[in-house]
Length: 232
Length: 114
Figure (cartoon, each protein chain N blue to C red):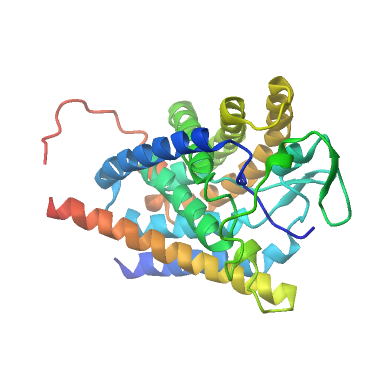
């Protein structure tokens, strides 16, 4: 068998549940577009294109985690650190849509499920951890690398549990949910370690070459100002 | 866009092209974590068809776009699998960059117009 399927395929989760998550994904992405507009400046817009292209490339690089089992980067945490949560979620979604429509990877019916897990849940978990960790870790290449590693491991496991939720709601085979959840969490912890190493290397490299292009260094440390923004 | 940013983008894109076009040929071909879990509990023949048991993958349907010229990260019609993966990967990187950069540029313009 030589197929390179990497995401949820058609038929694994039934039609109604897939449709519900597709609607959810579209609504969440529309919200991300609104929020992303505040972030997009002349540096971030082309950088976001590069982050999407880079995630596409690295998702092709499956690495062995167990005998007969591989894994690949999902990219949520990497995107959050480089371009922020809103643009980051859109970057990962762009990759998933291109993979689904052009490369027949991840079912068309399952696109909403895949976006929910990898672009929304994975990115949200990565964002919460990155924002928290950068309050305590040093704001340099090393601190950023450690942040990327820890956040990646957690984010990948969270994304895998998104599938468990979808499978619980619309799974079409009778299998024990705790077994599915535990098996996926275990293997994705290992995948997360691989993703963490890739993400840490990448963000540390960008932080050394062009620290001004790293969203997490520019934005996350600023105190949050509430109520002073004039509506445009 | 400044010239320095242009160089950074060009460098980043080159790295992505090398990863998708060259390194991807050395990637593991084992099923990934999700796929492997989905296959657990079933037995498979040499063609990868399910021969028995109970597993998530039993319900897997075919992809609506399985006949896409780039399906499964290869270019249909190119026999050499190294070349096929390399070209499909490079095309994917450029297409993703083009769509991503284009969409984000439009989103940014809209903001300025508002």
